[in-house]
Length: 75
Image (cartoon, rainbow, N blue to C red; front, side):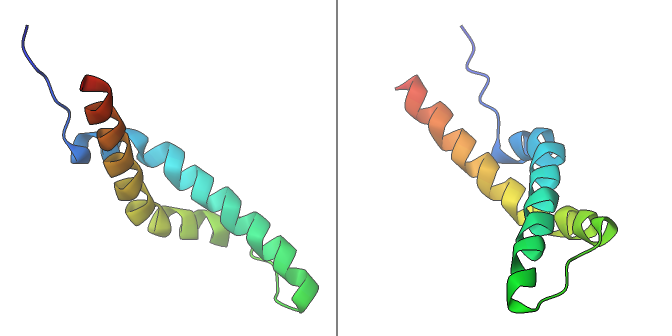
């Protein structure tokens, strides 16, 4: 049986669309809540752009976490 271990970068490529979308939604909701203290809400387009940019480091962290969980499951 061959061990086909997925590297973090492959996991990250697979997870990027989901993580970027999650980051965009969370940015949008965060800025909606920050209206209470006087900060303007982000437009949906700005939230999507922020999700695309901030999704890269978040995806890398998610890929490392998923790889760690897979390694734990193998032992």
